Image (tube, rainbow, N blue to C red; front, side, top):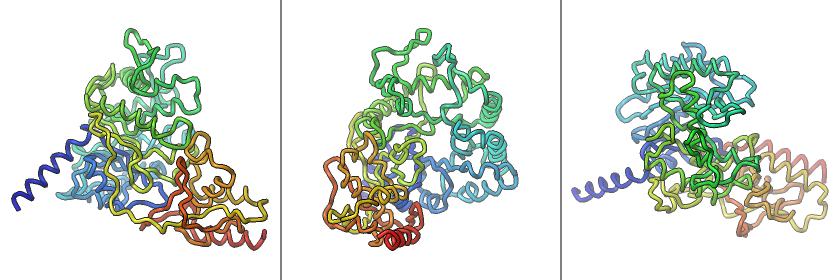
Length: 477
């Protein structure tokens, strides 16, 4: 018994050393088939990840995190910000989602994220007037509950809330966006008053996306031929330049020493010509050793608290920003690692420990029926399948972009079939599809078999999809 206890202690100590100090991950759950929360939490523990950032405060997720000592950032979605402008509702939210987990063996909550990038220009000022009151009410409710010293409210913001002037585009000239400068100053003052950090999401990948003129190597950390010279400080990567632009913006409103937390940073592996495992690995191979060495940035050297985005791919996320949105995970949809990496930042890359005990649906695929005679509705059926399933891997520069027309149809049909839990009615498509037990994957394109999930949430209700297909068959065949 004593030897067994010592072995377990050694294993725990070993796991604790697997991850960069202060490194966390974002755990998003916008998937049609979710892994059980207990499985995901075990993944975190197996890989030594001791911090997690959530996008809600779901009961099942919180219950799975209870007793683990994993540090948690819970979240209030943007669509609840208006409700949090009522102090009574804010107190109720804190009681339900923070206070009730504050016990020995409960959930180790450190932050409450109030909204998520609420000042994005694409939101057309929808949350402009309700974010600060929500932040104030939540922090004041935490303070009133006696939790304010250990739980801090913050607002995860996109890097578009600050900028450098066009006539002086260097980090030292950083300011907050002129249209929200006053609001940002008030938020920064409140965060400072309550000892809370400024949370920012930084995405070097997005500097490349849709901008072929951006210097490619500047998105990574292994050097560039022409660094940006900012009064003698040389910037060789966009992460440092972006972060230090924020440091300067904070300084411009009198809070240059406010702690900064990087709420999201990562690299997608699908959905764009620059989104692939090779570039993701290159990015993390540069980022993680810097974090491990507490290198910091030129204007803020030292430790940086960082949350990688993200943990697992999410096939139900909106692709309005781009097809890559569903592919930020360092793990696939089924919790299996995508590429070797070293979360300790020591450069000893190996595959992370994947989800254990994952159950898959039957080894069955839906494919284009080569015996189909009438192909006039093929395009309509592919569009239908891709409206309600994830076909982003078929896009330009993606892993399945090299399929022929029949292969495109098979991929689309199979993704829909899997989303609908392999219901045979979901593999008809007006006679254009058929079932097969032969794996139809190619060397570069994976035709998935979906996982069994206790919380399966298709993009539309399964029955509705089946009825629409059946109705189409009746009307058009």
